[in-house]
Amino acid sequence: MDQDLINILNRMKQNCKVEDMHYDCPICEDKGYTFKTDEHGYEVAVPCKCLAKKQSIQKMNRSGLTEVFKQKTINSFKADKKWQIEAKFKVKQYIEDFLKKGNNAGLILSGQPGSGKTHLGIGTMLELINNNIGCVYKEYLSMLTNLKQTSMDETDYIRELEKYTNPTVLFLDDFLKGEPTVADRKYIYKVINTRYLKGMPMIISTEKSIKEILEFDEAIGSRLIEQTKGNIIEFPRDFSNNYRLKNII
Image 1 (tube, rainbow, N blue to C red):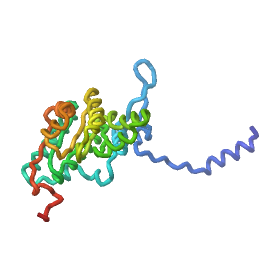
Image 2: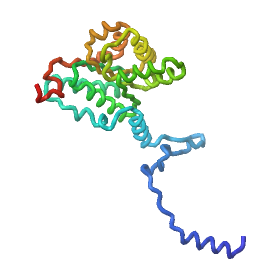
Image 3: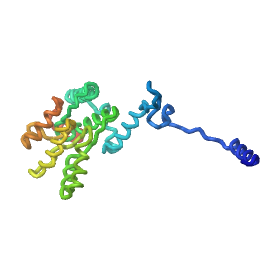
């Protein structure tokens, strides 16, 4: 190469300022992995300690929770009455057992409207997601509507069904809300039985009592109950326990 051209290139390099790259994780430079040489002399990828947090954030974004719902943590659940304190304690115990013992159990929260079932269910989800466990939230009626609307096309139906059968944990809110029909049972059963056979737990909030769930369909109810392994929280039923009616009645 011509010496004059080399000199020009060298001056250009000296005049260029290279900006320092900013990484959220300086250890792996945001790759999620670092590399090391193993005992056989091969270079292998090692997950960085930042990877789990990134994955939990991704899981949060895929959870189906709105920004408002993301504020419904266990700590923000107000527990003034004895039954609220007990429910909060049981939920915390459930989370601890799920994470430390790996019991893979489900959770049922049963009680009247406004008693805090959804809040505690979402708070449980958030704790699991923060520990890198994939969770998806779905309203029961919305799930049922989506499955019905896609039932005439097998490909669309399977794709929709997998939204509820594939997540590690599914939170089904307001289970059996309204007046479920006999035709609804096949959709409900398909989701619950598939998860039951795969050993994949569910969080259920419902206004129905355990007896009412069993009376609706014993096969569905018994599977849900078995999966909870005793993690069933029944809220006392009284208008005074509906926080939406506080200071009104």
